[in-house]
Amino acid sequence: MPQVLLVDDDPRFVKVVASLLSRRNLQVKSVSSGELARQALRNGDIDLALLDLNLPDIDGLSLIHELREEGNDTPVILLTARSKPHEQVLGLRLGGDDYITKPFDPELLLARIHAVLRRSGTGRTTDRGRSDLVDLSPALAGRSPVLVDLAARQVFRDGVAVRLAPMEYAVLEFLVRNRGRAVSKEEIMVQVWGTDRGVSRTLTEHISRLRRKLGEGLVVTRTGYGYIIPTAPEGPAARAQ
Image 1 (tube, rainbow, N blue to C red):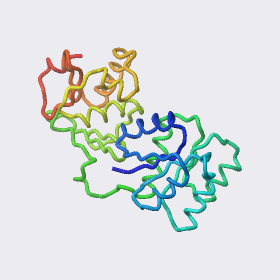
Image 2 (image 1 turned 60 degrees about the vertical axis):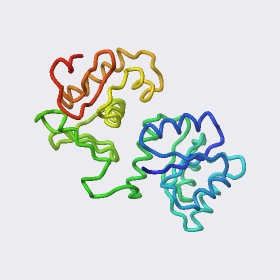
Image 3 (image 1 turned 90 degrees about the horizontal axis):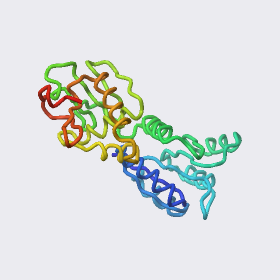
C-alpha cells in the first residue's frame, strides 16, 4: 500500500484529505511543519508527499529545493492557494512533480496522485497474481468475466476496459474490498460520499449503472441489509432491486 506524507498545518484540511486518501487504499502520514516533513522524507519510507507551500516554519519551495539538493527524489505534489503561473513554474523547476491549487476537486487530487505514483513506478509489478487484481468472475456464474485492478483503478469485462464514472468506481471499489459481506446503504454513502443524506436515490442510481455495465449478477441486493458482491453466484430473487 503506497504511503503518502501529507504536509499541512490546517487540521481541518488534513482530516478531510487523510480520510479521502485512506478510503482509496492509500496509507497516510500527516505532519504540520517543514521540519517534521524533512525528517519523515529522510527516513525513506514515503512513496509520495503532498506538500503545502505555506508552512509555519519554512517555505515549501525552499524545502523541496533542499531535499532535491540532497538527492532525495521522493515524488512531491505541491499544494497551495498560490495560483500565479510563475509560482507554479518555479515549484516545478525546483523539483515538484505536480502542482495543484486549493480548493481542488477530490477526484482531481486522487487522479494526480495515481498519475505521479505510476510515473515513479511505486507499487507496480507485472505479476498478474498480485493482491490488487481482483477477479470477480466466480460471482457471475459463467457470464462475462470481470476483473478489477485496484492499483490502476481500472475495470475490465471480458478483457475490455469498462469506463466508469469516478463515483461509480468508488462504489464498486468499496464493495470489492468488502466482498462477501453485505454492507448497508448508509455505510456505503458515508464511506464514498462522506454523508448518508439522500441515500436511496443517489446510491440506487449508481448501483443500477454498475449492473448495466458489469452484469446483473455482480452486485446483489440483500433485503434489509444492503448490497453485496458475493463470492459465489446467487439466485434471481437475491438480485432483485
